[in-house]
Amino acid sequence: MLVSCQSAPKVIAELEGNYPSRQADSVMVYEVGEAVPTEAKAIGKVKVTDGGLTPTYNCLYGNMLALAVRKTAESGGNVLRIDEHKKPAALGSTCHRVWGTMMLMPDSLVNIDTMTSLQEIEMNKDKELADMTREKISKVEKLFNNPHDILRLNAGPGWITSEVETPTRVYKRKNGFSASADYLHFWKKGLGIGINYMFYRASFDEGFDMNIHYIGPSIVYGMNLGKKWRWDLALGLGYANYRENILGYYGLTYYDLTESQSRLGFITQIGIEYKVAGNFAIGFQLNGLIIRLKKPEGYNVDKYDFYGIKRTDTQLGLRIYL
Image 1 (cartoon, one colour):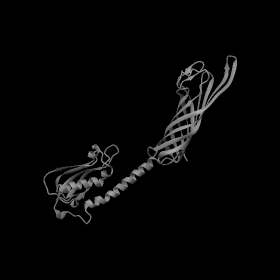
Image 2 (cartoon, one colour):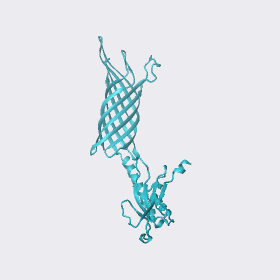
Image 3 (spheres, one colour):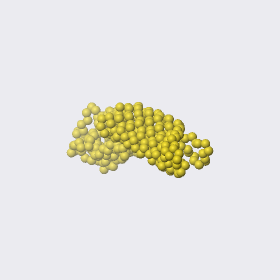
Image 4 (cartoon, helix red, strand yellow):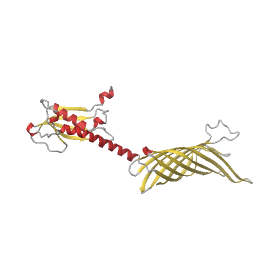
């Protein structure tokens, strides 16, 4: 009931007298800035605005103008002078809005050819709707007009955000170096697929290095933010390899050991980029990686709900549109 009450445009008229009504097709329309014959006198004001939830078709300028014309004829006028026309706005009303002056002048000065003003308005509504539809389609196409193929090369700092326990201490967070390479292919509507490679390396005070490699497919979504800017998001599941290298002396004992696990990894990527020239862009990217590792024998299984690696990278890099 609320929707039905608010779905029609609102027509408000203020009259300065009482005049017999006329046929709507006898009203001449003067747009903003057009000169009105001096013999015409004002008999009132009319405004047509949206009702709050007005459907798109009813919001067309032709429909709103036709309502003002009919109200002018109903009020006894034969001239409608448009004083103000507000177009739809992204942050305001989605309707055309019309403010006008209803006027009356001698019928001998009313010059309406075989096509009346009202008939012309009705005919122009279809063209207006077609133009509006083409404009919407054009905006959507520009929004999702991603480059079909993109190669991304990135590098930057990375952080292990899960705890890392060593024989001497527990690291709450550990920074390191990260790099990534991605190939993305986009279809229409912003969807696409990708192949993602990620690398991370960190060195610990206890004398061992940690290396993490990931490679796998992803589902991607991208959208333009203007002529130069665009952003994209990727979610992937693939092969992850975790490796520890221990190399050096501990007391009088020299160690050269490697421990490795291959597991499934889950990645998230979100990036924004700016096209600098031709097929080249620079971008900022935020990566996330989660790997659940196998717990060693004798490990206290109740100590952590999650045993593995959680990592976050912030990277800058180059994008090449292929």
